[in-house]
Length: 126
Image (cartoon, rainbow, N blue to C red; front, side, top):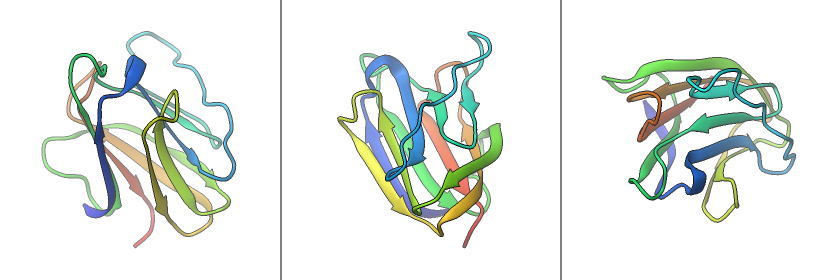
């Protein structure tokens, strides 16, 4: 993985969101309780380790995932303004990474389910 940015934090409610910083839209809900990632072209919702249990290490980059991670999601994400944001439900902690504006293919990899503590979000650009 070629790292663009990283955030390690206690995630309230165990839910992280991925969207365009300047064009925030609602994220989809999970289809089943066992689903770790739900996504649409507007936003991605990721179940992560709850902040009272431990820290979530979320990395954004491009290329291939790190060893030991499992694919959890792949889909298109509208990053119209080119500012991919990872945040918590309260917007208390956030990582914003500049990417090429437009519709990007995003892949999410996790270390374990149902509450991953290491998450890699890969965008389809160098």
